[in-house]
Structure formats: C-alpha cells, structure tokens
Image (cartoon, rainbow, N blue to C red; front, side):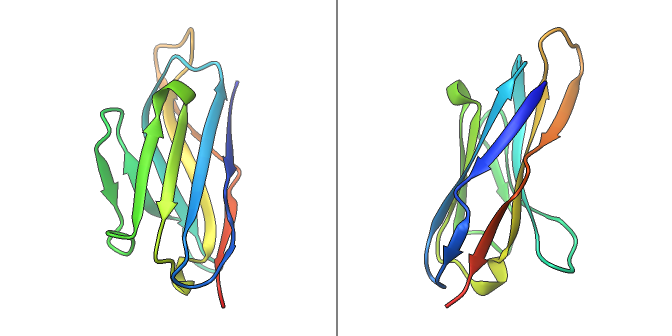
Length: 121
C-alpha cells in the first residue's frame, strides 16, 4: 500500500556532510509525523530526529546543532541534512512516517528500508 524509499547515504570523511531523503508513495491521505532513526552495529535503534505535521522538530542530543530535518508535504518527502559528521554517526539510517491511508480512519507507521552512512577517513 505504502512504500518509503530512502536515498543519499554513503561514505564521507569526518567533518563532511550528507543529505538523506525519504519519499513515500502509495495510498496516502495525510502524513502526520516523520522521523529518522539510526542503528549502529551491536546497538539498539535510536531516534535521531522527528518533524511534526506542523514542522516542529526535535533532535537527539548527540546531533543537535549538526543535523536538520525538513519536509516537503507536496512530495511526501522528509529530509535529513547532516553536517559536521563524526565517526560515531556511522549507522544504518531509517525513516518512518505515521500516516493515514485513503479509506482508513486510523493511522499507521511505515518504515523505510534503511540507508548506510559511514563516516571514516
């Protein structure tokens, strides 16, 4: 019904930047919050950033001041601009969206497939 496709991951040197994108397609009536999570090897998945339908954002303390999330509602897309990247930012990054499908009265959360971000010299 709904598919989230991420792009923009890759290998970058410490101090560099990357921009992740996550586009949703399918039977979408409206999208509530959009979020970014990450999971490093041997660690639990953790919240990186969340952006509400009104555009308010919250960030993990570890990325505040370096990462910025934004959304384009017309494109059903959420972005994560990552600056001043550190080796400890290395992880698989996942997007998720809480949305309401056409013909449904309830919301549901969908996840992207994940994109690898590696910060290394």
